Image (tube, rainbow, N blue to C red; front, side):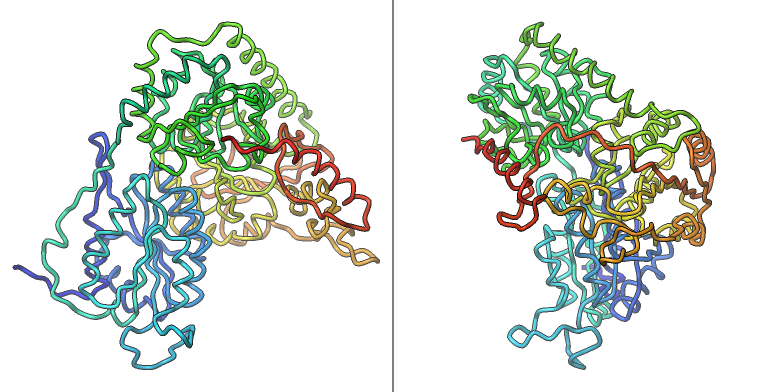
Length: 621
């Protein structure tokens, strides 16, 4: 057997460079490159191996370990999960900083490979720098924090253990059911240890991403339920995009006349002006989606995991006899809501269901009803996003209206946290299936800027706009430096509203009186109700190397966005919004428990409202 003598780190890098995915005849490199921040736990191992790879494994220099994972996840999502990045860190804080990003990846079923350094396997000095000592378990390190947020975890104590573990890692990354964060913890002495590797380990390997078809009986049962329904409703989730099932969904909806609502991850499954499209559903949903959901007698979930925002905390589907059909590649999600499960790839399942329902169509009066509701909501969107005059300061919804005017159909809008996801979900007119990129499985502040870098790397032909409030910006602006260093053209829309707008509004509703949510000086009583802090976020962004354009009015914002889009450099558009212009109220409930006892009247009233609304919760059995 022919062998090659390499260190563990060198062997791993060469192995990763030869892994590919293939689906529907399209082949892609699985690990597009490696993000890294080096410390004593990986500099002499993975760091040296990347240097020696001579570009075979492209390297990107991160500024924050969590942000590196976000960039990899943004890339993976924009690549339909067919490609991702590896992220290497030292042991210690570098490794624990990966945990948040790993949780985000796993919750959203998006692949990312994590390669944190680890303590010495041979224990020549004990404890070493940054080692966590656990008296009852000598094999525990801080990397064990990554176990619950990883879909696969292994610690490579010996060189030869890498071979089966690396293959298992690739299997999980490319499995549409299991994919998420994959962690290979690498003791720093093992990284540098040499071993005679079989040449077969470095052979080009293709991981085919299959489209498992559902069994015929499940399709027949689902078709029977759909034929019997008078008011069916589709909920399109992120699985529609992961499967590339947008065309199949469009055909299914057009032939049956069944209306389509969407989760945050499913936005863009249909174009915003498609006759069957109702927009988003649930707590941040449109009025027409939520109204139809309340009277639906059958809900057809396609690639959704039914989060509490989607179901309005189990209060939305109010018809006494409502039933569910769930199309999902994951058994866990297919069986939710006591549904008739159709377990398989979304595109394959939709194609089979379309055939099984040949000739079936919902009643025309139902079609007229939901289309009239969609038209009424379209008018709400127009009024809400286009109401400001050119010389006025825009509200947040009007920022989205101006952005909608400027952007091309293929431009990507990225967001994750704060009040923007709610406004985007209700108001954004999604024109192309990859345009809407909102991470709402973990809703992680700080995701937007690194994810925009990842999305741009995945498809440089698209302009990418990261929408960031001041709270999120202060969490993680550091990857702007990476965008400047690498010449990665992203556009940042930095919205200044002086605090946590989303949680401030929620705090008020639950009797918290916006406590601790404003970015202001303290007043004489100690509350944060004084003047806004004199923080210049635009100057901060400029100091990180990006071009900055300031806008105070609607007209200035429009001009600044156009200039940013036409620029070839990373550019930030800074706009201070008018806080007096309120958001649209929620169309459905969200369960956030209120203090059961309180001396404050605001909390007492909020508790009464909470108890009234909670009575509508139900388990679908």
